[in-house]
Length: 446
Image: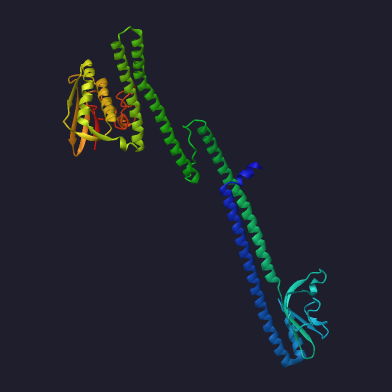
């Protein structure tokens, strides 16, 4: 019972029931209207035929008198499918005709009998059957009463036949509707159950689950397709969030460890005030670097949210590139690499100095890590104007970023380095694009 209750709550079943009810009402109204109109039309045709015959009888009576009238009525009464003919006396007793009995009081009033009346034929006396007819009563000048009528059995049969057909048709429609309800509703309930099960697993934390699709392209499939696309996007965002968290933890672990080691070293050795001061200055420097890292992360979020316009300022890109190259020159020397820079003076851009410095530092750091030296152990940093844009590039002779990873290089905290097991660019939204075989990295500013 509960399953049927759920079935009747579905939209498809409700719409089917509503359409069935509306169709049934329209069909019933149409059938009753047609049968009523047909019955009235047949009754009118019957009245016209009876009226014409009454007019003929009056003419026969005026020409041949009572004897001619009796002969005519007797001859017509014997014909197959004859009308009703009754000759009665002034008091209403039946003298002749093809009718055994009439409804009492029918011959008292001249003219149309009004409503249909019941009568019995001579063949119906033993079976006690009665028929329905419509007649006209004519009163002659000698007091005789002549009834001319026609049986209404055919219109009645037509009406009964049409109504029976209506009942059968409605019964077939009802059974068909029940079958359709059962088939559609059961299928809909199964699909809803599968969607509910998948939703339960998704809410439990399994974002790899997807809502089932039947392939029919109906509204359930379109809804499932939209929700699956949304779940895919959510899964991708969650995966990105986990990756960002892991990379942030990895990036902050080293400076925090250095900060602790410096503090521990300052406490472990006896030193003069100047020594403590130097240690504190180093700790403050490391703390400032951590603060800058956090500020850079906040800035990235604000830039991506479109709310960091006020943080942008005029940046001397030439000076920033020169400072960054100078900072990494000792590191390159330790790796037997030559860090070269071609930087024109006084190139300015509108941006954030910290983020630009972090992006360039990541590019140079990766070039130093993955450059294989060889015949040309140089790393070239170039800054130039091209086609109305400012192009900053870092090029080396390493293996290059794999082709299937180049789109990932511009993603924040994405491990899309030259080797799958090694981290690549973590430059944030200002990112280096993986080049061709020479693994050039380009940061382009319009």
